[in-house]
Length: 97
Image 1: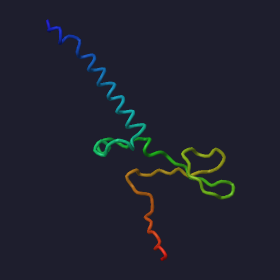
Image 2: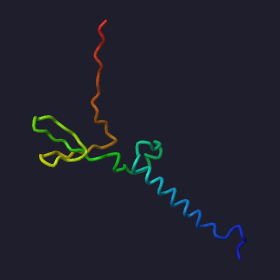
Image 3: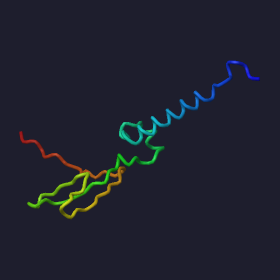
Image 4: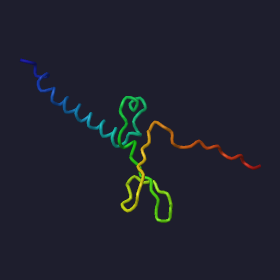
């Protein structure tokens, strides 16, 4: 028979590890941008960090990009690689003296 201090110790540790894994999974899924870089490099990209976007034009021809598709008009589905910079580089204009 095992000593008293060794009995029943596996279940609390197992529950602790399951809770820790659930918390880490929720962190990865709901707030992937707050993860440390060394952790992000080891994990797959979270679906929340790369949402699908929809590009469409309104009745006046104005361009819209939203995270939900319009119900009454055609739209284009956009997907971006989160590791790619989609912002164009901008060179500031020289200041006038």
